[in-house]
Structures are given as structure tokens and as C-alpha cells.
Length: 192
Image 1: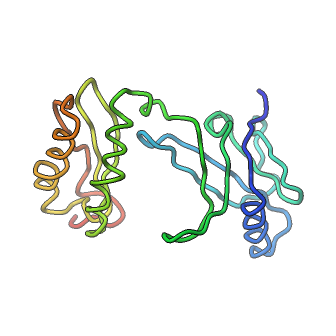
Image 2 (image 1 turned 45 degrees about the vertical axis):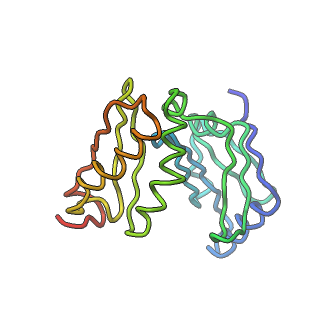
């Protein structure tokens, strides 16, 4: 396998080094994981022991610290950039990734995800909630509620009157919106 072309900016490298030094341990590396989460990637950055490198890991050297990427993550991050950003919403490490998840390649996925990101989730966030795109089956959209929406007594109404109505109005090709949330489970459901 060829090594991934993940670019790490100087600002990001400086923050990674600062995290390493705050741990007070010289023998650490950074494990970078990219997994598919519906139409988006979910990224995880974790300081690990240097001797935890797996045989098929790709290694990106940043001077005094190595980044370990498993095979799948390396493919998902090929061509991406890891940067440290500061803006009005806060600061942190951020990936700019030109790659797409399997679901994001579906013709409706980008439009649904954009509507969730730009209109629906900002409204749900005011109540501590979030909705994620899980799948698209032909013209049926499968969603999962989280945060304050998971287990909320109003989740069914939010789905039917709010989320489903907005999606169908903005994207008429959608025939059905399905909620696959386990409303009784999770870290902080509204009720159990």
C-alpha cells in the first residue's frame, strides 16, 4: 500500500506536540482514525504508546511524533489536510477531506446532509438535540436522533411535523423518512 498523502499543517503539528508534552511522556504517538458515520466521516485522535503500532499501519512522521493510521483510515484520509483552526465557534483540530463516505455517493445524500446541517440541526441544537443521516434506501431516508432528542417524548412529533416535513418539502423525491433511534438507550436519553 502506498503511504497516504495526509497533510498536517504547522499549526496542527504544534498543537499535537503540545498535547504530547502535556502528557509528560516522550514515548507516545498519535493514532488517527477515520470511520464512516452516515454521509460524513467521524475522526478520532488519540495519544497511544509508540509500541502500539500495528503491522499494517501507515506512519506519518512529524519530526518528534508519529501519526499511526490503520489501513481503512489511511484510504479515507488520502489527500486530506489536518489543520488547527480558531474561529467564532471555537478552536481545535479540523480535517478538510476531499473523500466521500459510501453513503455520500448516493445522489440524495449530499442534499439531505446539507439540509440537516444548515437548517434542521441548528434548530434541534437549541434543545440539545441532533439528527444524523444513517442511510438512504431508494427514496427512503433513514435518520437517527441523538442528544436531547433521543428518548424525548416529542421526538415522534419532531420527526413527523418538523424533520420529515422539511425534508420532503425541500427534496420532493423523498418518499419516506424513517427514525431508527433506540429512544430508551444511549448516554443521556431524555427518559429510560
